[in-house]
Each structure stands twice: as C-alpha cells, then as structure tokens.
Length: 300
Figure 1: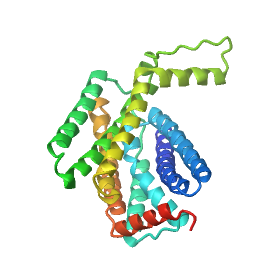
Figure 2: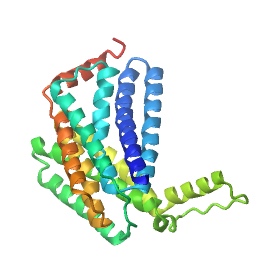
Figure 3: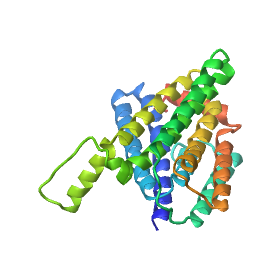
C-alpha cells in the first residue's frame, strides 16, 4: 500500500512542480506589463513548487527512490496537457504520443510495485556518488566551454543530474538514521499527534542530509539558468530531463541497493522515451515564438 501511495504522491508532486515552474514564467511575463499581477502569479506558482517539494519528500520516505525518481517524466506530461487546456497551446500527435507513453509507463510501474526491503544507508557511497556526478560534469563543462553548440547541453545535463541526486538525500533525511543527526531539538510538554508531526518535521529538515537536498535543489536551479544563455530550451530540456530521471534510478541501485522488477525497468525506459517525444518536437520553435509573444504582450 505504501509503495502505491508513494507513486501516486510522486506523480502529483512532479506534476505540481512542472506546472508551478510554468506559472513562474507566466508571472515574469505578466510582470512586464503589470508588476502586481505578475508578482501574485509568481508567488502562487512558487508556493506550488514548494508544496511539490514536500509531496516528493513524503513520496520518497514511503517508497523506492528509483521509482519516485523515474516518475519525474510525469511532470512534463502533465505540463503538456496543462499548456494545451489552460494556455490553449497547440499539441501535436508526437506530444500526445509522449503523454500517452508516459502515463502508460507510470501505470505499468505501479502495477508491479512491491514493498521495499529495509534500506541500508551508506553515507560514504552516497557522497562518493555525488562527487562523481559533479566531477564528470564539471570536467565536461571545462573541456567544452568554447564549444557553444555542446556546452549548453552539458550544463543542462549537470542541472538535471543534481536535481536527480535530491531524492537520494531526501530518502536519508527522512530515515531514522538521518533524523538521529538532527541539528535542532524541539521539546514540548504535550505529546499529541500534531506535536509529534512538528518534531518529526524539524528533525527531517534540520539534519545535514535535509539541508543538503535543499541546497542542491537551489544549486541545480541556478546552474540551469546558465544553460539558458547557451542554447534554446528545446535542445536543453531533453538533457535535463534524461539526467533528472536516470540519476536517481542509478543512485538508488548503487547507494541503497534497491532492486526493480523487469517490467518496472521497461516502464522507466518508456518514460524516458516519452520525455524525448515531448521535448524533441517539431513545434518547438513555434512554441518559443509564442512564448516570446506572450512575454511581450501578456494581456493579449
């Protein structure tokens, strides 16, 4: 039951996060014409991304890090439908196929869910994995810094990889091991359920692993801004999304010893394929032009 709930929360969390990011961009566009309206939209969207982060935190605490990370593609599928129904953006056959593949793959993964065994945490392996990810991408960034056609994709991949590391640290921060290293101790006279919830939340967010995943999330967002200066979003998003999905899956296998059913592996591959169907689209340039028009004339 917990594994199924974990997947449902992951789907909702990633969907809310992607739509919230789109809302932030809409708010910035409206701010050029009406600062107040743009600020309200941006704040509401940011609140959505914050809620999404805690939904994903809860999802990771209940189930497999690999499967929660793989569900990252569902956010792009939900965003495609949101853009079509709410923002009235055109959606082609390729995008519809991508949405269908992602949702079908998510259902496939959920159908073969199982209760995960007790995870053994190996902090040294987790930090070595993070160091390896950073070293590989920083080296590629330095080597390709003069190749403007490639470095943007590398930077976007780096941002996605760091975002993919976040669920690994979230898993540790919500565990008894992580909470035992909390830097903040709250003591209350009463022992009600609400008090226990506050204490548990303080332990999760104030231990070193909790602080790390929040810091890594911010760094990932900042690095992604650098990539936008080097290339178009249509070329960058596949690199970001592929790493955002694959890194937590690989990390969960290496750092936590998680194991997946062969059908679930098939589902993960299909989700990645669906992401590419959504992001490598012919309408990419038209969508960017439409975004530029909205930014220039948000009230039209």
